[in-house]
Length: 341
Picture 1 (cartoon, one colour):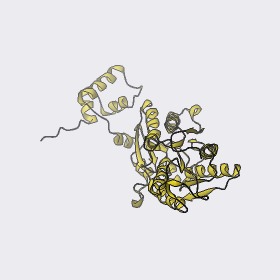
Picture 2: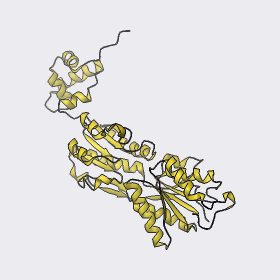
Picture 3: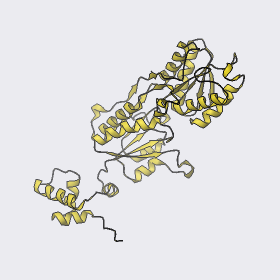
Picture 4: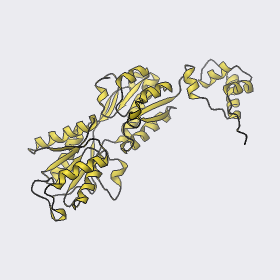
């Protein structure tokens, strides 16, 4: 089988009867090209089905129209909606995006920021924890999406997030309104989980209630199931009821952890929400599944992604009037996992 040779910028120049440098000017949409030459080059590009190399453009010192996005947990479905919103705004600005999970190859010591730097991306969206030094070395505009610890190290970067302390308050207030007084929190590591946990603890104390926090080693479903099993097992009497000291409700700091709590409860013979009410956080696609039907706190991740995309495009285009940090107000999404005592 003969593989067709991919056309190069030299082939375009030869077809259009111009120099390679003039083709580069046209591809960069330079105003220093006559309309006649521009049309000839664009016609050659179309005839040859030529696709410019973004890496070659970067090495030549031109913009690649690409953006690197750092996340820290592919398993967290919050990123699905956040990336969808981000993609819509970047596409409108003519940018493509590449995504890297900072934890996926952590065992190899690979820094996703350095990888993006090698690819000459035009900008970065930090939707997960990253090295502040690496971000600075990248030399490109960046925006922080969500609550991240690195924001304290790089205060000059615009931050697009949700008021997650308020979200923790909201979860407790909802459960208290349903008559719950023994409300536990299943939490984990990270700045975002920390703010949600803080909101929970503040709200409990404001209501004159004693906080009860069980922290998992990570923010995944399996880890939450394990700590929730320990939290709920002592004094559990199965579907017939709960002991007088065990929680009647649990607030989990994200939706995967909330499903872990539900799984642990069912393993112990506890009905949700009959014996135990559960509230999650993020309103990820998982929460709306009928089998889960999870009451959750939403920070509107799609809207957050859109706002981060607009902020980054504004930085890339030098429009300082549209570059600002923004914090959204979370809201309660009621489904079937929480009920009155």
